[in-house]
Image 1 (cartoon, rainbow, N blue to C red):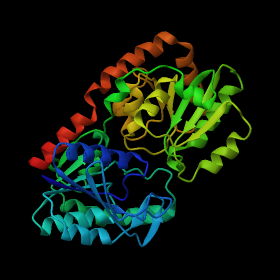
Image 2: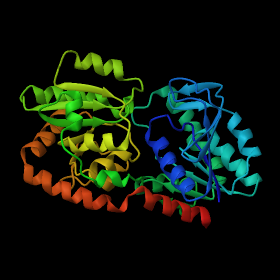
Image 3: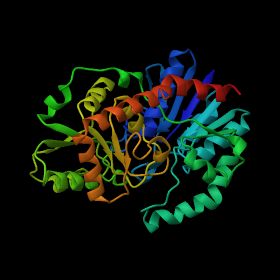
Image 4: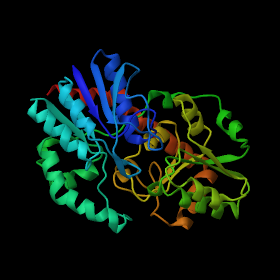
Length: 376
């Protein structure tokens, strides 16, 4: 089968959506399918010179972007033309609301090919500025009706978004397939490797994600500082690539030596060691779909304290396999983190529940379910 993925970015860009595309694409290429990825020629920070290359068997076509509307929105009209001139059996686009979703669907329709779309749950308007809400109003009331019309199947990553999607399409068109994680996170590695790199000797509380405003790393710093007023047996790590918040985070941390800023981390084994060296994983986001890190942390046996964003409460049940805390409630975050740190029996019980829960969310299973949709 010839499979064409369409997304704004691809490897080496770091992000949840890019990870989903890469995990699916590389698996299908290894299975013998002819896999293409069409994206813009940027990693969000600089223009990528190579317009075509093969990465792990995946043919990557990068079209020159003309301009960007935001850190995650680049306009690259050339994607339309390479879609027209290349051959494929199915087109799989990613992230609702982007212009290329419509073009991918329209081209697939004209060529008599199937168009599958994964939303990645971008629906909440919470904390969005007025300058963004205005175009989103147009998207919700006009663009989505057209772009979803040209989809044969729409993949929702969480049941939370199904009622929203039903505004634009029949429920028969929707299929829920959650995000996944690599089986390496079930493996157990020698403790201490990650902490040694950062010079950490105490128990570690982890923030792992893009340093983007929606992830609210500043809130994590606030929680850390509040805890460190009373405790000297803990340290905190902020791990992830900069997407606009790094300087702000550095200014907030200042000279606090017990809060470590690591930057981007590469390699699944390194990431697995990072999780396993941590006591608690913390998600302070005010907007999420269903983060990959949630399942990775669960598979690694970590208890999680998170905001109840969108799809997260479907996977994280308060008091069962972690704790949910409203965005901005610093005291409650502090309370739940310390409760887990100080109660090893509770932590151990949650760890077992999370490992068991994620057995059904490996990328091999997700890829198999998605391939079944292609073949329908």
